[in-house]
Image (cartoon, rainbow, N blue to C red; front, side, top):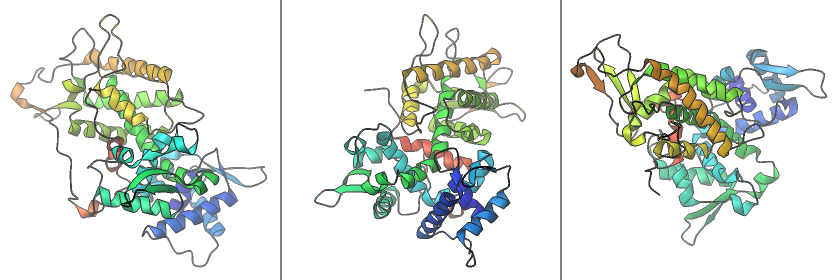
Length: 400
Protein backbone atom coordinates (compact mmCIF):
# COMPACT_ATOMS: atom_id res chain seq x y z
CA UNK A 1 0.00 0.00 0.00
CA UNK A 2 1.24 3.54 -0.72
CA UNK A 3 1.41 4.50 2.97
CA UNK A 4 3.80 1.59 3.59
CA UNK A 5 6.01 2.74 0.72
CA UNK A 6 6.13 6.35 1.91
CA UNK A 7 6.65 5.35 5.54
CA UNK A 8 9.50 3.04 4.60
CA UNK A 9 11.23 5.70 2.50
CA UNK A 10 10.94 8.34 5.23
CA UNK A 11 12.59 6.01 7.77
CA UNK A 12 15.43 4.93 5.48
CA UNK A 13 16.82 8.28 4.35
CA UNK A 14 19.60 10.34 5.87
CA UNK A 15 19.02 13.93 6.88
CA UNK A 16 16.32 15.81 8.74
CA UNK A 17 13.80 15.60 5.90
CA UNK A 18 13.30 14.85 2.24
CA UNK A 19 12.13 16.99 -0.67
CA UNK A 20 9.03 16.10 -2.63
CA UNK A 21 10.91 15.16 -5.82
CA UNK A 22 13.36 12.93 -3.96
CA UNK A 23 10.51 11.27 -2.05
CA UNK A 24 8.73 10.45 -5.31
CA UNK A 25 11.96 9.12 -6.85
CA UNK A 26 12.67 6.82 -3.92
CA UNK A 27 9.08 5.56 -3.85
CA UNK A 28 9.44 4.63 -7.52
CA UNK A 29 12.69 2.82 -6.73
CA UNK A 30 11.10 0.97 -3.81
CA UNK A 31 8.15 -0.12 -5.97
CA UNK A 32 10.58 -1.67 -8.42
CA UNK A 33 12.47 -3.45 -5.66
CA UNK A 34 9.26 -4.82 -4.09
CA UNK A 35 8.13 -6.25 -7.42
CA UNK A 36 11.59 -7.70 -8.10
CA UNK A 37 11.44 -9.50 -4.75
CA UNK A 38 8.08 -11.04 -5.58
CA UNK A 39 5.98 -8.64 -3.53
CA UNK A 40 2.83 -6.91 -4.67
CA UNK A 41 2.30 -3.17 -4.93
CA UNK A 42 -1.16 -1.63 -4.94
CA UNK A 43 -2.22 -0.74 -8.48
CA UNK A 44 -2.05 3.01 -9.06
CA UNK A 45 -4.54 2.86 -11.97
CA UNK A 46 -2.27 4.94 -14.23
CA UNK A 47 -2.03 7.68 -11.61
CA UNK A 48 1.30 9.49 -11.44
CA UNK A 49 3.53 8.53 -8.52
CA UNK A 50 3.48 12.13 -7.32
CA UNK A 51 -0.30 11.95 -6.96
CA UNK A 52 -0.07 8.63 -5.12
CA UNK A 53 2.52 10.07 -2.72
CA UNK A 54 0.24 13.06 -2.05
CA UNK A 55 -2.63 10.72 -1.16
CA UNK A 56 -0.37 8.65 1.07
CA UNK A 57 0.87 11.74 2.91
CA UNK A 58 -2.72 12.83 3.39
CA UNK A 59 -3.65 9.41 4.81
CA UNK A 60 -0.68 9.37 7.16
CA UNK A 61 -1.56 12.80 8.45
CA UNK A 62 0.46 15.55 10.17
CA UNK A 63 0.83 13.53 13.39
CA UNK A 64 3.04 11.02 11.57
CA UNK A 65 4.59 13.07 8.76
CA UNK A 66 5.29 16.78 9.01
CA UNK A 67 5.88 19.35 6.29
CA UNK A 68 8.22 22.32 6.54
CA UNK A 69 6.68 25.36 4.91
CA UNK A 70 8.30 28.41 3.38
CA UNK A 71 11.07 26.49 1.60
CA UNK A 72 12.08 26.31 -2.05
CA UNK A 73 10.52 22.84 -2.25
CA UNK A 74 7.96 21.03 -0.09
CA UNK A 75 10.01 19.10 2.49
CA UNK A 76 8.68 16.27 4.63
CA UNK A 77 10.01 14.62 7.78
CA UNK A 78 9.03 11.81 10.15
CA UNK A 79 7.17 13.13 13.18
CA UNK A 80 6.30 9.88 14.97
CA UNK A 81 8.87 7.20 14.12
CA UNK A 82 7.15 4.71 16.39
CA UNK A 83 3.94 4.84 14.38
CA UNK A 84 5.73 5.02 11.03
CA UNK A 85 7.70 1.89 11.90
CA UNK A 86 4.42 -0.05 11.61
CA UNK A 87 4.26 0.90 7.94
CA UNK A 88 7.95 0.11 7.44
CA UNK A 89 7.42 -3.35 8.93
CA UNK A 90 5.03 -4.11 6.09
CA UNK A 91 7.97 -4.14 3.67
CA UNK A 92 11.00 -5.13 5.74
CA UNK A 93 10.41 -8.88 5.35
CA UNK A 94 11.09 -8.61 1.61
CA UNK A 95 14.59 -7.27 2.16
CA UNK A 96 15.76 -8.90 5.40
CA UNK A 97 18.59 -10.90 3.82
CA UNK A 98 19.87 -7.82 1.97
CA UNK A 99 19.65 -5.88 5.23
CA UNK A 100 21.66 -8.51 7.10
CA UNK A 101 24.40 -8.60 4.49
CA UNK A 102 24.56 -4.80 4.52
CA UNK A 103 24.74 -4.68 8.32
CA UNK A 104 27.51 -7.28 8.33
CA UNK A 105 29.45 -5.25 5.75
CA UNK A 106 28.93 -2.13 7.84
CA UNK A 107 31.38 -3.45 10.43
CA UNK A 108 34.04 -2.57 7.84
CA UNK A 109 32.32 0.31 6.02
CA UNK A 110 31.99 2.33 9.24
CA UNK A 111 35.78 2.26 9.67
CA UNK A 112 36.12 4.65 6.74
CA UNK A 113 39.26 4.95 4.67
CA UNK A 114 39.59 3.89 1.05
CA UNK A 115 37.68 1.08 -0.68
CA UNK A 116 40.42 -1.43 0.15
CA UNK A 117 39.95 -0.76 3.87
CA UNK A 118 36.20 -1.38 3.63
CA UNK A 119 36.37 -4.79 1.99
CA UNK A 120 35.15 -7.81 3.92
CA UNK A 121 36.11 -11.42 3.27
CA UNK A 122 33.42 -13.99 2.54
CA UNK A 123 34.35 -15.97 5.67
CA UNK A 124 34.11 -12.86 7.82
CA UNK A 125 30.77 -12.02 6.24
CA UNK A 126 29.47 -15.46 7.17
CA UNK A 127 30.54 -14.96 10.78
CA UNK A 128 28.47 -11.78 10.94
CA UNK A 129 25.26 -13.30 9.56
CA UNK A 130 22.51 -15.21 11.37
CA UNK A 131 23.55 -18.66 12.46
CA UNK A 132 20.35 -20.67 12.68
CA UNK A 133 17.42 -18.94 14.31
CA UNK A 134 16.04 -16.57 11.73
CA UNK A 135 13.13 -17.81 9.64
CA UNK A 136 14.53 -18.09 6.13
CA UNK A 137 12.86 -19.71 3.14
CA UNK A 138 13.33 -23.50 2.96
CA UNK A 139 16.58 -23.41 0.94
CA UNK A 140 18.64 -22.60 4.02
CA UNK A 141 21.10 -19.89 5.04
CA UNK A 142 23.91 -20.65 2.57
CA UNK A 143 21.63 -20.77 -0.48
CA UNK A 144 19.81 -17.60 0.57
CA UNK A 145 23.09 -15.80 1.18
CA UNK A 146 24.33 -16.70 -2.30
CA UNK A 147 21.06 -15.49 -3.84
CA UNK A 148 21.30 -12.27 -1.85
CA UNK A 149 24.87 -11.61 -2.95
CA UNK A 150 23.94 -12.26 -6.58
CA UNK A 151 20.96 -9.92 -6.27
CA UNK A 152 22.95 -7.09 -4.68
CA UNK A 153 25.68 -7.57 -7.26
CA UNK A 154 23.16 -7.50 -10.10
CA UNK A 155 21.73 -4.25 -8.72
CA UNK A 156 25.25 -2.75 -8.60
CA UNK A 157 25.13 -2.29 -4.84
CA UNK A 158 28.11 -4.52 -4.10
CA UNK A 159 31.07 -5.98 -5.96
CA UNK A 160 31.97 -9.63 -5.34
CA UNK A 161 35.41 -11.03 -6.10
CA UNK A 162 35.46 -14.77 -6.74
CA UNK A 163 38.27 -17.32 -7.04
CA UNK A 164 38.91 -19.75 -9.87
CA UNK A 165 36.14 -22.07 -8.62
CA UNK A 166 33.60 -19.21 -8.59
CA UNK A 167 33.52 -19.09 -4.77
CA UNK A 168 33.19 -15.55 -3.31
CA UNK A 169 36.32 -14.37 -1.54
CA UNK A 170 35.84 -10.61 -1.02
CA UNK A 171 32.73 -8.41 -0.89
CA UNK A 172 32.80 -4.61 -1.14
CA UNK A 173 30.64 -1.69 -2.21
CA UNK A 174 30.52 -1.18 -5.96
CA UNK A 175 31.95 1.95 -7.56
CA UNK A 176 28.46 2.90 -8.77
CA UNK A 177 27.07 2.67 -5.25
CA UNK A 178 29.84 4.89 -3.90
CA UNK A 179 29.19 7.46 -6.62
CA UNK A 180 25.50 7.70 -5.73
CA UNK A 181 26.28 8.28 -2.07
CA UNK A 182 25.51 4.72 -0.88
CA UNK A 183 21.79 5.50 -1.04
CA UNK A 184 20.67 1.95 -1.86
CA UNK A 185 23.12 0.33 0.53
CA UNK A 186 22.01 2.75 3.25
CA UNK A 187 18.38 1.82 2.60
CA UNK A 188 19.05 -1.78 3.62
CA UNK A 189 21.06 -0.71 6.66
CA UNK A 190 18.36 1.68 7.84
CA UNK A 191 15.82 -1.15 7.72
CA UNK A 192 17.67 -3.23 10.28
CA UNK A 193 19.58 -0.68 12.39
CA UNK A 194 16.71 0.00 14.85
CA UNK A 195 16.58 -3.70 15.70
CA UNK A 196 20.34 -3.99 16.11
CA UNK A 197 20.05 -1.01 18.43
CA UNK A 198 17.33 -2.76 20.44
CA UNK A 199 19.49 -5.89 20.73
CA UNK A 200 22.41 -3.83 21.96
CA UNK A 201 20.22 -2.06 24.53
CA UNK A 202 18.91 -5.37 25.84
CA UNK A 203 22.44 -6.69 26.28
CA UNK A 204 23.64 -3.46 27.93
CA UNK A 205 20.74 -3.57 30.40
CA UNK A 206 21.84 -7.05 31.50
CA UNK A 207 25.24 -5.68 32.54
CA UNK A 208 23.43 -3.59 35.14
CA UNK A 209 21.92 -6.73 36.67
CA UNK A 210 25.30 -7.80 38.06
CA UNK A 211 24.78 -8.32 41.82
CA UNK A 212 26.72 -6.18 44.31
CA UNK A 213 29.85 -7.57 45.94
CA UNK A 214 28.02 -7.97 49.26
CA UNK A 215 26.06 -10.95 47.92
CA UNK A 216 27.23 -11.78 44.41
CA UNK A 217 25.40 -15.04 43.70
CA UNK A 218 22.09 -15.22 45.54
CA UNK A 219 20.20 -12.11 44.45
CA UNK A 220 17.25 -12.44 42.08
CA UNK A 221 15.35 -9.48 40.61
CA UNK A 222 11.78 -9.14 39.41
CA UNK A 223 11.61 -9.92 35.66
CA UNK A 224 9.05 -7.25 34.80
CA UNK A 225 10.89 -4.60 36.80
CA UNK A 226 14.12 -5.53 35.04
CA UNK A 227 12.41 -5.00 31.68
CA UNK A 228 10.98 -1.67 32.86
CA UNK A 229 14.44 -0.62 33.99
CA UNK A 230 15.83 -1.55 30.57
CA UNK A 231 13.30 0.78 29.00
CA UNK A 232 14.28 3.56 31.43
CA UNK A 233 17.93 2.99 30.61
CA UNK A 234 17.15 3.18 26.89
CA UNK A 235 15.30 6.48 27.25
CA UNK A 236 18.18 7.92 29.24
CA UNK A 237 20.81 6.79 26.74
CA UNK A 238 18.73 8.12 23.84
CA UNK A 239 18.37 11.60 25.28
CA UNK A 240 22.06 11.63 26.23
CA UNK A 241 23.03 10.71 22.67
CA UNK A 242 24.28 7.15 23.25
CA UNK A 243 21.27 5.48 21.59
CA UNK A 244 20.52 6.37 17.98
CA UNK A 245 16.95 5.10 17.67
CA UNK A 246 14.12 5.78 20.10
CA UNK A 247 12.34 2.83 18.48
CA UNK A 248 14.78 0.59 20.35
CA UNK A 249 13.06 1.51 23.62
CA UNK A 250 9.87 -0.30 22.59
CA UNK A 251 8.64 -2.25 25.62
CA UNK A 252 7.52 -5.31 23.67
CA UNK A 253 10.84 -5.54 21.85
CA UNK A 254 12.75 -5.44 25.14
CA UNK A 255 10.37 -8.00 26.65
CA UNK A 256 11.06 -10.38 23.79
CA UNK A 257 14.75 -9.58 24.06
CA UNK A 258 14.78 -10.98 27.57
CA UNK A 259 12.91 -14.05 26.36
CA UNK A 260 15.62 -14.64 23.77
CA UNK A 261 18.33 -14.18 26.41
CA UNK A 262 16.54 -16.76 28.53
CA UNK A 263 16.39 -19.26 25.68
CA UNK A 264 20.09 -18.79 24.99
CA UNK A 265 20.98 -19.39 28.64
CA UNK A 266 22.35 -15.90 29.21
CA UNK A 267 19.87 -15.37 32.04
CA UNK A 268 18.08 -17.82 34.35
CA UNK A 269 14.41 -17.14 35.05
CA UNK A 270 12.61 -18.58 38.08
CA UNK A 271 8.85 -18.97 37.77
CA UNK A 272 6.64 -20.07 40.62
CA UNK A 273 3.99 -22.70 39.97
CA UNK A 274 1.61 -20.59 42.03
CA UNK A 275 -0.44 -18.17 39.97
CA UNK A 276 0.06 -14.49 40.64
CA UNK A 277 3.68 -14.85 41.72
CA UNK A 278 6.10 -12.66 39.79
CA UNK A 279 8.92 -14.31 37.85
CA UNK A 280 12.47 -13.44 38.87
CA UNK A 281 15.80 -13.62 37.06
CA UNK A 282 19.53 -13.47 37.41
CA UNK A 283 22.46 -13.66 35.00
CA UNK A 284 23.72 -17.19 34.38
CA UNK A 285 27.05 -17.89 36.15
CA UNK A 286 28.96 -18.37 32.88
CA UNK A 287 27.81 -14.94 31.68
CA UNK A 288 28.22 -13.05 34.98
CA UNK A 289 30.25 -9.81 34.55
CA UNK A 290 33.06 -8.98 36.96
CA UNK A 291 33.33 -6.19 39.52
CA UNK A 292 36.43 -4.48 40.82
CA UNK A 293 37.02 -6.05 44.27
CA UNK A 294 38.06 -2.69 45.72
CA UNK A 295 35.69 -0.15 44.14
CA UNK A 296 32.79 -2.44 43.27
CA UNK A 297 32.57 -0.95 39.76
CA UNK A 298 31.73 -3.11 36.76
CA UNK A 299 34.75 -4.10 34.70
CA UNK A 300 34.55 -3.83 30.88
CA UNK A 301 35.46 -7.44 30.19
CA UNK A 302 33.99 -10.91 30.31
CA UNK A 303 31.67 -12.99 28.15
CA UNK A 304 28.64 -10.69 28.34
CA UNK A 305 30.76 -7.60 27.69
CA UNK A 306 32.34 -9.21 24.63
CA UNK A 307 28.91 -10.23 23.36
CA UNK A 308 27.61 -6.67 23.76
CA UNK A 309 30.67 -5.33 21.95
CA UNK A 310 30.07 -7.70 19.03
CA UNK A 311 26.56 -6.35 18.61
CA UNK A 312 27.88 -2.79 18.75
CA UNK A 313 30.09 -3.42 15.71
CA UNK A 314 27.02 -3.26 13.43
CA UNK A 315 25.38 -0.27 15.14
CA UNK A 316 24.94 2.89 13.14
CA UNK A 317 27.57 5.51 13.81
CA UNK A 318 26.99 9.10 12.80
CA UNK A 319 27.47 12.70 13.76
CA UNK A 320 25.30 12.29 16.86
CA UNK A 321 27.13 9.25 18.25
CA UNK A 322 30.62 7.80 18.21
CA UNK A 323 31.93 4.50 19.54
CA UNK A 324 34.85 4.71 21.92
CA UNK A 325 36.22 3.86 25.33
CA UNK A 326 34.70 6.96 26.93
CA UNK A 327 31.24 6.14 25.58
CA UNK A 328 31.53 2.51 26.64
CA UNK A 329 32.59 3.51 30.14
CA UNK A 330 29.75 6.02 30.46
CA UNK A 331 27.14 3.53 29.22
CA UNK A 332 28.45 0.83 31.56
CA UNK A 333 28.27 3.19 34.54
CA UNK A 334 24.72 4.26 33.66
CA UNK A 335 23.55 0.66 33.22
CA UNK A 336 25.03 -0.25 36.60
CA UNK A 337 23.39 2.74 38.31
CA UNK A 338 19.96 1.92 36.86
CA UNK A 339 20.26 -1.80 37.55
CA UNK A 340 21.40 -1.54 41.16
CA UNK A 341 18.09 0.06 42.12
CA UNK A 342 16.47 -3.33 41.57
CA UNK A 343 18.65 -5.06 44.15
CA UNK A 344 17.16 -3.01 46.98
CA UNK A 345 14.07 -5.20 46.74
CA UNK A 346 15.69 -8.32 45.30
CA UNK A 347 14.89 -11.73 46.77
CA UNK A 348 15.53 -15.42 46.37
CA UNK A 349 13.14 -17.34 44.12
CA UNK A 350 12.37 -19.63 47.03
CA UNK A 351 11.48 -16.81 49.44
CA UNK A 352 8.20 -17.82 51.06
CA UNK A 353 7.71 -20.63 48.51
CA UNK A 354 8.69 -24.32 48.69
CA UNK A 355 11.65 -25.12 46.43
CA UNK A 356 9.61 -27.65 44.46
CA UNK A 357 7.21 -24.88 43.44
CA UNK A 358 9.88 -22.91 41.59
CA UNK A 359 10.71 -23.73 37.96
CA UNK A 360 14.05 -22.53 36.59
CA UNK A 361 14.48 -21.82 32.89
CA UNK A 362 16.89 -23.86 30.79
CA UNK A 363 18.68 -23.23 27.52
CA UNK A 364 16.57 -24.13 24.51
CA UNK A 365 17.84 -25.60 21.26
CA UNK A 366 17.68 -23.18 18.36
CA UNK A 367 15.13 -23.94 15.70
CA UNK A 368 16.81 -25.43 12.62
CA UNK A 369 13.82 -25.69 10.31
CA UNK A 370 10.62 -23.83 9.60
CA UNK A 371 7.89 -25.28 11.80
CA UNK A 372 4.88 -23.18 10.88
CA UNK A 373 4.80 -21.88 7.28
CA UNK A 374 2.02 -19.42 8.09
CA UNK A 375 4.41 -17.52 10.36
CA UNK A 376 6.94 -16.79 7.64
CA UNK A 377 7.99 -13.14 7.50
CA UNK A 378 5.90 -11.82 10.36
CA UNK A 379 7.56 -8.45 10.05
CA UNK A 380 5.37 -6.77 12.68
CA UNK A 381 6.27 -9.34 15.36
CA UNK A 382 9.00 -7.84 17.60
CA UNK A 383 10.15 -11.31 18.69
CA UNK A 384 10.71 -12.32 15.08
CA UNK A 385 12.79 -9.23 14.55
CA UNK A 386 14.72 -9.44 17.80
CA UNK A 387 16.68 -12.48 16.66
CA UNK A 388 18.72 -9.96 14.70
CA UNK A 389 21.23 -10.14 17.53
CA UNK A 390 22.18 -13.64 16.46
CA UNK A 391 23.65 -12.23 13.25
CA UNK A 392 26.64 -10.91 15.14
CA UNK A 393 28.42 -14.26 15.09
CA UNK A 394 29.40 -16.98 17.56
CA UNK A 395 28.89 -16.27 21.23
CA UNK A 396 32.17 -15.26 22.87
CA UNK A 397 33.73 -17.98 25.01
CA UNK A 398 35.82 -15.67 27.14
CA UNK A 399 38.98 -17.19 25.66
CA UNK A 400 41.32 -15.39 23.31
